[in-house]
Length: 444
Ligand code: NCD
Ligand code: ZN
Ligand code: ZN
Image (cartoon, rainbow, N blue to C red; front, side, top):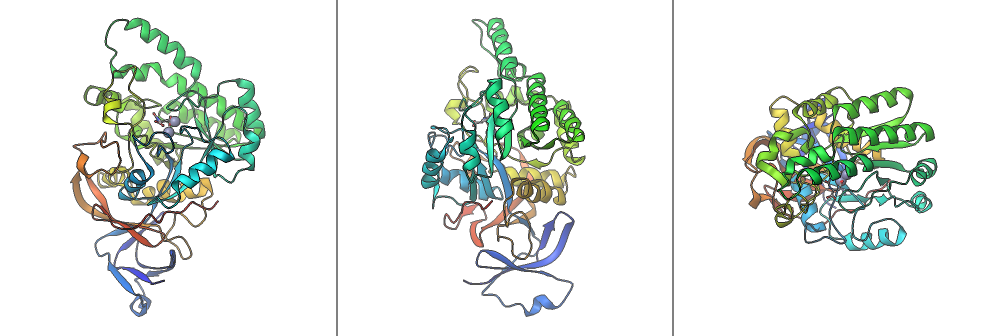
């Protein structure tokens, strides 16, 4: 296979930017050549790509996406979703099991694998979901992690029986990723709201009241206690409140093996946006107060949040346009992930080092993804070349997600991916998919 040299760029690492060229061959990074020496001049390559003025990052790893196959390909399919991923700088995703049918055993997992094979522009790993009684099957599988819903969200995979949950934590040997909101708190609030609005139109903003801070905290406390009791590795998905961070910190200090993630919408949107976005920003857990949004940024800065994951959860415009009781929860995030974060770098809220840490190195480390997350010799040539100076408005017509909308439409972001390589192959360039569906399942 031919050698490709990415020349004259700067590479992003967790220690900062480095002037270096990257030589790739056979899908791997063959050499990283610092430009302080003359060594680079002698490097031979079949193709040289000039990256002057650009930054080369390890491809982002998104450990929380919903690509909707099997079962809901009218919202999204693997081709459109993986196109959105590489356009947003993401080269590896871990796809959630809340499909139809749910991915809860060897048969549904292998059927899903067959469905995806050869159709993905990005690399991928698959979750199994806990259904109350499949812990042996989960332990015997080769997936990177298992998803546990403590309440119903899209897909109704919630498991609420305490005995089943306790047995699961006692026996599960995999990394447990939790959707932590308390079922009983939500049901009680829902009944109150329905009574209050009887016969009247229900505004989207009630979503944050039906699923309040208390619902998240109660579930987080419970799973942290279980993680501590049984010594399990637990990753809390989409934290959204200051109080959850305090609980996680308390249990980390007690010795629980905990990590957590934040989604871009919990960094970018607040309850103040219901007026313009309505049910389009209905998501579980819900969008929170400005104070909690600030706490999420602080949590990243202070190392309380380990990584950023999109929770890309597309639903069609028609579905999102229904009234509150019928509009589904979830927002699409993949097309805009890196622009959203690089824009924060431009606005000085974030650094490139932090983007690499939260979106590349940490996800690879926590989920045990071999060969991913760094630009180093021997690592996979999953790379994204970004133009930090490019300003562009988020527009529907430029999105790859099948659902065809974004909560950030009309926002102008500065800093966009201009080239994405997956396994050494150029798949995305200047707003277009230019390569083949070369994505492979990850090795753990
Ligand atoms: C997700 C979906 O639509 O699949 N929805 C959401 O609001 N986040 C499910 C989930 O992750 O809870
Ligand atoms: Zn969730
Ligand atoms: Zn999700």
